[in-house]
Image (tube, rainbow, N blue to C red; front, side):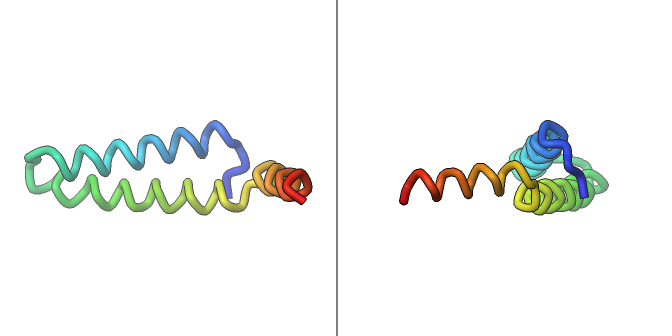
Length: 68
C-alpha cells in the first residue's frame, strides 16, 4: 500500500473528479463505462491507504489524549 500522504490525497482528488465527470457529462459509450470503474479503483485505493496511514493513526491517538 502507498505510504506517501500527498500521493494518497492526489489519488482521492482524481477519483472524486472522475466520478463527478462521469455522472454529470454525456460521454461516449467507452468512457461512460471506463470512468466510473477508474473512479471506484482510485477512491477505494485512496480510502484504504488513508485509513491505514500511520501518521493519521498517531494524530487520532493524540486527539483522543487531548479529549480525555
